[in-house]
Image (tube, rainbow, N blue to C red):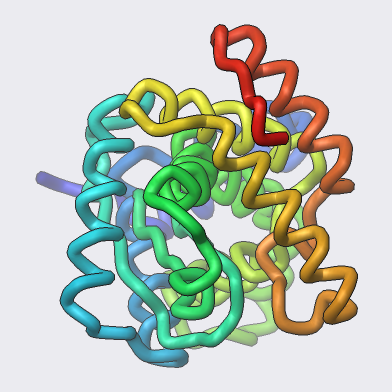
Length: 245
């Protein structure tokens, strides 16, 4: 299958700079999104390394596959891997390349909690959050980067930009949206959606005790209390009673 040249996309951006930011939401196609995510995720893996324990990799992949089966974008080449970092965190790249950090594995108390975390990351992918942020960054930075020759190629530049945006995190509304859809995916897949709330409650306590240094999954996210409140409302809408919270 032929893929549009990124240079063609670039000139499309350059000729559309006067358009409002909302108009950029569909400039990157699904195939380009996959290419961008694959390139950036390879760089991420090379930088941090993978945790290859067979038991955990199988568990993460099996839970991830159940969630993908009920998500809103089933046409992506999802992969679920464990990155060798001892922090409680998870990240997702465009195109469905999703990673949990090794430190998360001993923190989650159940498959339900792990499913909710993975569902949250799938939610980011399904809502194309990083893709939209890449498109917004193009307006501000791409023209300057190209003409100043600060990157050796456009593909390399986009891969680096993508990884940076993933690590920087999301806006408050993007996080609420990922919570919402991730919880729904977990529920559809047969997991207990209340597990996201118990996960957040426990993480909040640990962050307070450790000054947020070792537990980074929600360090750049909206206030945890507000997220829990919204999730409780969603669980009630789903007809789920979360007695443990």
